[in-house]
Image 1 (cartoon, protein in one colour):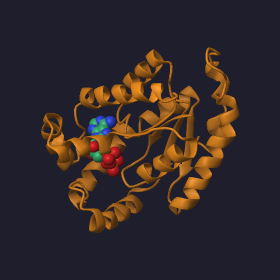
Image 2: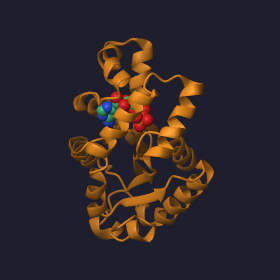
Image 3: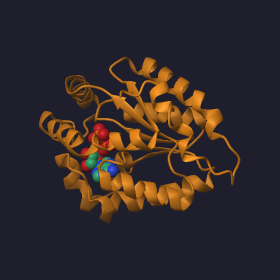
Image 4: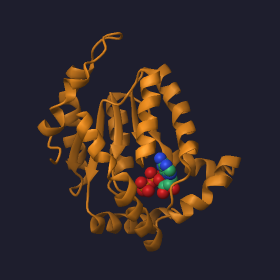
Length: 217
Ligand code: ADP
């Protein structure tokens, strides 16, 4: 199972990605976590990206793309499945991730969109801020991250819809309920995806699934 997550900050991307990864026994590749880990370890990369994270801006595309390529190569060796959480965040990253996936023979089966409105995600992020102290969970930086999401990330949803791999779920509900719906949808798709190695999947195979699982039209 190969899944890309697309969601505004605070929609539950990290939580649901971890659930999917555990359920299918596949690696969870979270760009934000990888970047925060570099910052915490004060690596050269961490020092270079810290300001972007603190301001709620996107780090340069090439930085994340290099990290993701490395993680995908490792995922391939581990069986070929993955949950990508945090990329793509703009059209350029979407195209680049697709090209890397194609080169490695592991393009995404599903683009999973978690749909939640700004008021709800802001409320959740401020609640998390009280517990976790992430440097970018302040009201001002949250507003900046949301603005970026609407401006450059949400437009790529259409691209996945056109490719026939979009599944959209209502993420306004409690995490457990959202998780159940996601696993049910992904399990229903599994028989279509598990075709042996070498049997190239016809690109049209998934064309109707977005609709079947409630992708908004
Ligand atoms: P959230 O979705 O809640 O903003 P993430 O942990 O996914 O949290 O990302 C945190 C920060 O890491 C982003 O605000 C951005 O600065 C950086 N980041 C993560 N993924 C990317 C990416 N694909 N491209 C550019 N910057 C990224």
